[in-house]
Image (tube, rainbow, N blue to C red):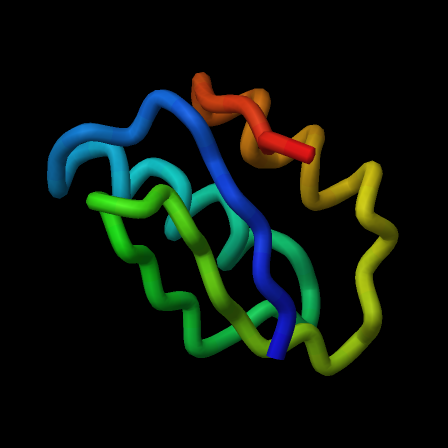
Length: 66
């Protein structure tokens, strides 16, 4: 299970946009988002490149907080 913190999410629509973006990456499954904390957890069966994950989140309109 991987965890990332995403900034800018404030509603269910935001969560759906990030979920859709991450689901498009092969091997990423079981995405769970805590809107209050901004923490996104997911299974990464194919060990996707972190740059690919960051690009998908950015394309959805959000940023990963380091």
